[in-house]
Image (tube, rainbow, N blue to C red; front, side):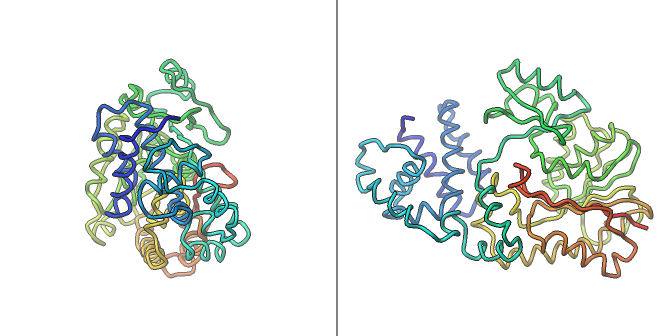
Length: 395
């Protein structure tokens, strides 16, 4: 592929915002692409994919590069991809043979997988022999997965509709509402998205709403709803009958969820801002089903959010564990007797998952609950994001 100076500079601008200003990669890329309307589809794809991949391999690139200068870092990354560099003066300091030799002499697994040393130690401690294969799988590029909005269209009809627009997809067993893109492309501009016929949602994430075993007419609370992806899935599974109360501590996320619900044709959606413990107390024993998709480290979704590994620390993970247990100690009071609850994370660490559920069940707040089943989804086994899903029942 031919390199162009202006698109390389686009990548440079994005990386500066991510690493020097601490901004989130997805938002930075979105803003960078909007900054130059003259870039064509190929240029935009180059900038997005190169930025994500350089973020993913940032530690390794920095180790192999002869300097921290941006052109050296980019050139090193370009050589790592098996490409040849053009004879530009910006790349004259780079020696492909030396970089290759340096890479081949590497034995440090944290460097090879381009993660912080503390994360390598934590992963080994928590996942044991499964860690190496898992972090390797989490360093692969994520597939684009769609969730069909069954309130408006069937999976087969959407597949045909997208194919007419040159978007080829395939189906997989065990994920009844999922379609996977054959080739990465921007689907948000497609008319089917604007009509609310689908959302972009990883296959593992789609298992969460399924696990709640909802039925039409139920009163369901999604207590950590964020921008509402799982609330919308729940509404579709309930055939738009009953009530889905979507709660969050951030009002802007609920506003986003509201817009998405409108586009999806969901009328049973009710946003509710959590303004403290009073909000939870007012809803005591009111829900047939309760979803706790709690804040977590996000280690299961490193493939689509590679910048997470540079933002995390042992302290931030410990803090998130405390938040998870606080939620478990208070939010389940909203569930009726005989009702069911799902505790879910997009983490692969047992300390955020089964150990949290165990601690809850042994506490005063969890004494009336029993674990029905739990599911540990690893990227190396599923091919999708890492997740944990536990279903509990209130006696």
